[in-house]
Image (cartoon, rainbow, N blue to C red; front, side):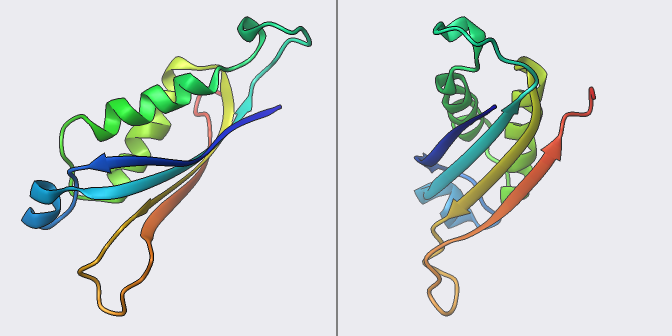
Length: 118
């Protein structure tokens, strides 16, 4: 079973350049979490509440500023694995980058990770 959050939009103050950290940038997250196990009953306790995934992202993005989007991806991945019964995680982070030549819509990083406890 997979639980997902798509297009989670968050303002963050991260980046290599001072203006990114000062002004902030829009970040967009897509998360897919494969559950280690799930119970076939109609109760939230038998699955992973996707609000927990959102809480992790907000905690990391609103936390200490980092330079690399890859660092944000690693921090989110590590915290999700540490506090949830997740076997595999797919994470994609995109950031608005108006100062990049060619004016791309988004730049970013993606992880496809298996829990280190398995």
